[in-house]
Image 1 (tube, rainbow, N blue to C red):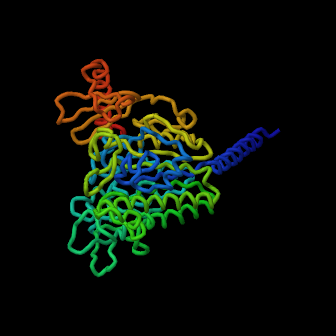
Image 2 (cartoon, rainbow, N blue to C red):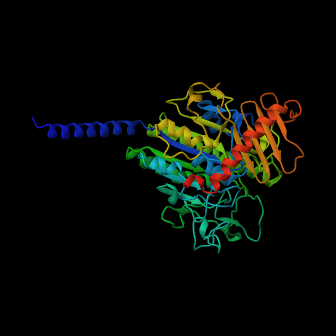
Length: 475
């Protein structure tokens, strides 16, 4: 008997079965879409009790989702939060501590890179803000300027197959244009284009080319016009897809089209009617995407996540609402970091589920890796935790607290207490978020042991972040 031949046959059969099983698993892999708004407040959406802005499609989505009452952006400003969505790590670990600083380092492992390795088609659409998109053309805040060459880090170098991306903000209607001679934060749509000039930011594709076509009208619609074909193509090819859709809405400058402005014509302030109008326009595009998923027959096995990158500006030029919470964008009080957050996945999550589990944007990566059964590639620190257990039991408590830090402010938040400190405070503040979500009653004097315990945990976490930023995780 030829034992060597039998051995080769056994190995071949095992390889075939492994391939077949892998193909079967690939067919079951969920599609994943991460949607994020820019400066949308917790109270700006109907499903959180907002009554000023019309968000019927998001409200319908929320009714079919797991809604997190305590969902946090990892930072009170945009760029750091965006990186946390893709890496599962706090921005102080990978060197993007604030907006328009740093870039996504090549040593970081992004969700797009990890998912592409297991067969996903990956696409980024909208605002990037994790590095520049060009070294040769003057673009946006940093692109094409001397001294910024080291910050070149477009989505295509971070795992994305398809890109339709801007470096930073654009007007939310006619995104390439602004009124001549004006640098205002809001305006009604420009009807006479001879009175307009270039805004100064471009859309770029995965080839490093400036996109010139289909750039007129509502910016959220312009973005979705690229997302829909991406979804259709991946579905036709029977490939699971990972789509990151980062709307510019409602970051300044806010501009809305005539139809959406008409919905808010009772508001005399140009800033208010355009802010409200552009949010409703974005809401319509979320509805368009969900409708397309249903028509393609992939809605049940598509996990769609929605959140904002930080709290609202909350001022006359951008009248977003943080709801009942203290603070706004750039603050580590709840109003700056608690944002709308939900996950819709009909195949796994019961409609109408609500949870008080403290979730954060850094949780996306470990959640998705657990869903797909992907092992971590190394032992670098991950700040997020998997949300999968909360899909079936929304009453679960978080296993470890969430750390925050930004420009002279620090905070640590667990299931009940939140510790807050800053350069401007004379002492630590402690709040019981279960009974005082508005952070009005400082309990630091009543719970000194809790304060000291949380300070110790915060200090150790900060030291870990400093080691990461120094490159320890890459050695």
